[in-house]
Length: 447
Image (cartoon, rainbow, N blue to C red; front, side, top):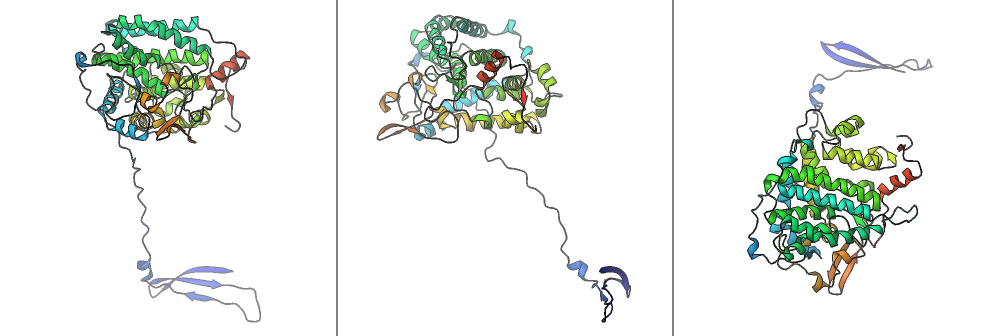
């Protein structure tokens, strides 16, 4: 047995160590080990380590200056086509004035919604074009009633009835754009293409952030034609875009649109991105709603109608068959731990630059015309032998080489490689309701 004794030796402390053993022929042993008075100075001081603040490799993207509309008298209107068909084309785009124009428009829309509720927009005094756009969206929803989904049993894949819906939009868009005041038939052909591509792909029956971006580009074209001034941006973001999102939910639940390029649970959302950017801007200085409040069902219920971000979370939770964001949308769950909405909004800006404009598989479906022009030297569909976006059966990334057009195999996303179809999660909830199983969400075990 070992005992420690504290002793004084010539006025200095000493440590005594006594080792006691069992009685034996030798006896009991004891050792006294004094500590030198200078040994305390030789011991290294314990200095707490200061953790360096995390550094984000991508700085917060700023809002470029929004340019004035161009002189339409010198424009040659054209039907928009895809021009980003290779990594080289994508690099051209990322350093082009069009890239800055898109950033400026999207971020200006987001800033116009800062600290505003949806109900704060006075529609009575809104710009006339805003009312015309809302009327067009109402007309599009009526088309859904005239184009019911076909009977495909309990399948959760895209419903072919969606193709009739898209065809109806194409036949009726001419008078809609005439009411908007577009100057010519060629301008209608160019601008209407963005609207046609705003609701999903007719061949694949899918929808993703690229189609959402087409709707915003449709609004940008109206601005470039001086039909939508910057004073209308708040109404566009909080009223028009919100109406568009609600229409898309109707389409998703009716035609079971498949998520285009979905990353599964590791994505922000199966279909949308911009509502989270605009919604974070709305909540920047909210007095009591914090990022963590998305887990509070009472907050979602009371504030969901006023804030796009909360409305998206509320719909996401209602459309899943499993309860808990950490299981269905872990990225949203992680973001809820942010210190404030300013951090969330900055992160959404970074994500838009990196995951939307910066992703080649997304931007290969982007359309360029005269109002949203491509850079000189970018590829052309007809020269590369690529089918138009509306007729392409297979999504994902293309590669233009000496041997023609090839498909790039990817393993970092769901449903955008080799035409692999991914069922709609909204369809799962709808089918459960048909069977009488949709009254509540089931919990994952041990949640």
